[in-house]
Length: 219
Image (cartoon, rainbow, N blue to C red; front, side):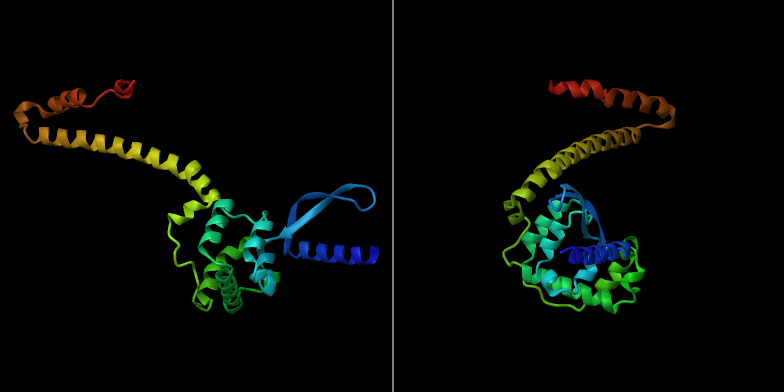
C-alpha cells in the first residue's frame, strides 16, 4: 500500500505543480495517526482537460457541483438553473462541443496556460465548437424555474428586494420629472419683464416638497 500511496502522491503533486488541480481545503485521515490531509479539486484548467474523459462529460453538473473551489458567480443559483433547463444529454453535448472547440481554436496547449489565461480563449473555443441540436425540456419557461426550491429562495432573497427598490427609484424619478415639467410650463408663461429668474426659484420652492415632510406623510 505504501508504494501505491507514494505513486499517487507524486502524481497529485505533479498535477498541482502543472496547475490542473488546486487545494480545496482539508479532511481528516485515518491512516496511522489521525491528522489533517489536504484535499484537492479541479482548477478550471483541469476541468477543461477532464472533458476528454467521457464519464466527466456525462456527469458534467455533478463535476461542477463537487468541485466547489471552481469560482462560479451565484454558484447555487446558476447550477440550479442549468439543471432545470438542460437535460444530462444536453450537457454532454454542450461539454463535448466546447471541448472540441477548444482543441480546434488557436489556444496554446493547456500545459502552457494558467487558469487566469483561460478566460481570453473561451469565446474562441465557443466559436470553433461544432453546432449540435439540443434536446432541452420543451415545457421549460421562466416561471417553471420557480418550482425549484433553490431558485425560488434565491429570487425571494435577491430579486424581489431589488424590484421593490427599483420601483421606489422609478417613482422618485417620475416625481422629479413631473416637477421639472410643471416648472418648464410655468416658465413658458413668463416674459423677461416678469423677472423669470426670481419667479422660477419661488415656484420651485413652493412646488417641490421637503423630503422629510414627504416621507412622514405615510405615518
